[in-house]
Amino acid sequence: MSTHTAQLDHVILLVPYKTLHTPPPWLTSNFTLSPGGQHADAKTEDRLILFADGTYLELIAFIDDDPTKRQGHWWDKPFGIVDFAVTTPKDRTFDLAGLRERLERSGSGVGYAEPVAGGRRREDGLEVQWEVTFPVGAERGEVPFWCHDVTARERRVAIGEGNTRHPCRAVGMSRITVDVGPDSMERFGSALAAITDGSRRDPDGYAVGNPIRDEGQSVDSWIGLRPIDRGGVGHRLRLTLRLPRDATGGRDAIKEHIGEGTVLIDFEQ
Image 1 (cartoon, rainbow, N blue to C red):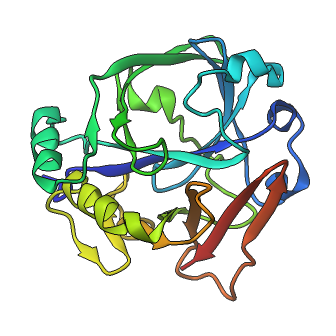
Image 2: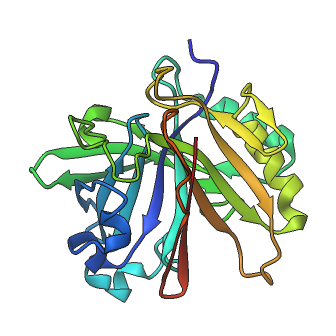
């Protein structure tokens, strides 16, 4: 049985609608993009960047950049990395009651609502269904939401020959770092300790598993917190991708400004 109660599932990158259909060079020179589809609420559409460790980066956009589709949506945010999801290892059962109890004991003020149904239609017409469990007592992206498949995971995360091979050579997700105000570090640290109950932790973060456990390509990922004073503007997420062990030399970080937002992606072995 997995030693983790949570494993990293995917990270959400909000982009302009045009980016999905005409990807700019900063994406195509680094990544292989896979098809996605339109979500069941008819407000958003996506494309995926799939990694060999079973995680993926979801490029999501409001259809036609329609501001009415943004209104009241949980991802009505500046462009950039806006949220991230964990899931339950396949050899475990999602224990929402136990999660809530741990969070209650943590004193963090963070909890989780009841699961709600979600889905999308793939470009090939197949329906993908899941349930998502969203946090309460925190802004979206300060702590993860949970995503659990109703249809087979392979239908949502269609890893195949070649679609996990990227020009940047990334093989998976090493770390997602949440920038929060210094006065929030203790509160969100307590929440993440409860969410990742029983996982290893170090001064920089909390360990979570990966969907594919193969020593040659996958080790634990980490959720980290970093204090930052941004004048009360909120938080920001930064993704670190893992390069293969035989990679020579480092890769420059991706730092791309899109409107009022910024995409930050680092690389490490």
